[in-house]
Length: 420
Image 1: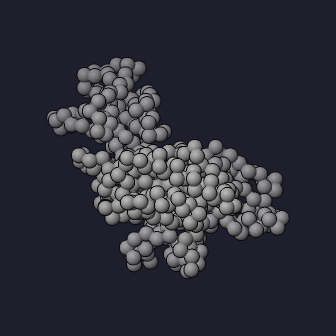
Image 2: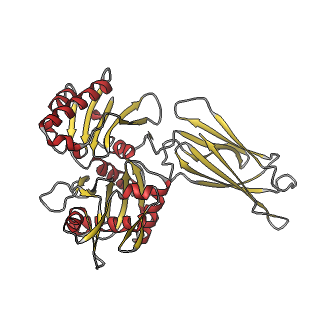
Image 3: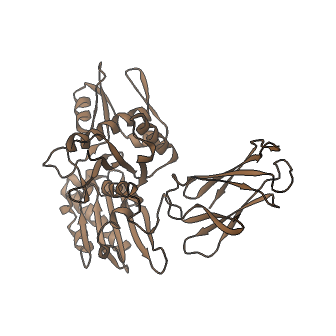
């Protein structure tokens, strides 16, 4: 049976699902019924009073509205701060609630597509933090999904992969995205940086101060005001730029006809596309690529959540000087973890080179090993582990492993944190 390859966008207002359709050889949004092109499930959860029944989305709203249960919303924000919720005297962690929500979200494609095995899933969020991603891994592990089949991305990454999965003429120059939802107005801009091999594709993200509540769109005057705000933003952001394509997504653009002035401006000499589920689709493209032996995206992808520099060491291997790469530019910082072992040769200092993409100003990071026991040359083996807490901060651990029975290791550890 075909394994499910999924992209799931989880936001504090709505969540959506896309999947890889092997018949269409492309990713598609999935709806609750055959008639629905996509489903926007409110990210809320409700426990029915006096039972073990839980509901999500519109059912959760109904349960709470009729006084039959206790509802919890803003699940992503709750997880991001490690929060809890007390329901009927029982304290639930954000992980507990997210597990119930995600399990029921996964039942949508399982029921609709008739397959239970998850081949790969990418969860995407507005922003991703170590705490949120750790919780999501605990959630999926508790659901029996293998770790190597679970990945996470922020919206900048999902947008990037969505766009570069389209025809090249849509993004050969510049492409941009306006995301209008209850959480605000966000602008993403994709640029192809020419003259580099491999090719570099970069996305910049800005949360616009002009964001407004979608409630104002409930009146004619509010719609005019929203249209004026969007048009002003577009004129400021797109002037003097060669933008090939403009994408619109989010609950605010579900019916974009209210923004006639804005649409006239962005459609002038540009191709414009509007629709829900863009981030979920981008996540599904990422999930699809993760199960391939060779990537379909031979680019260095730079954006929030990705490393902008390569970290390496100069080592001697089999008599030759070599560069050992610990983390490559364009890698997901959360998954960019490396370890290596070395024999020290006439040195008590480890040096790491940091090489930014497109910038020749290489810098060095150094860790002194003077704290380790003094031994004859080539009789100290060290293990180096590098991991990241963000795209700009790396932690490096160095362990003294000694040299066999003659010079036993102490397992003494040195740790240093660096901004890169």
